[in-house]
Length: 66
Image: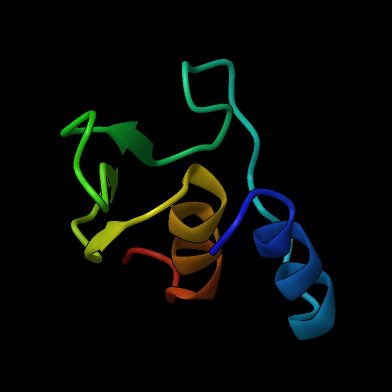
């Protein structure tokens, strides 16, 4: 997913990507393996993603932690 597409998809789904004061700019999203096709990880290990926005979208879609 290219930059900007994650934000558009979140709007379509009525989701909010949680921003944070981190290097990726999104809560729960970390740059794990720079230089790989999917370098970003969602904090709760929802998978590997090609962009920080795509990972943040996955976090926004996931149910809240109990």
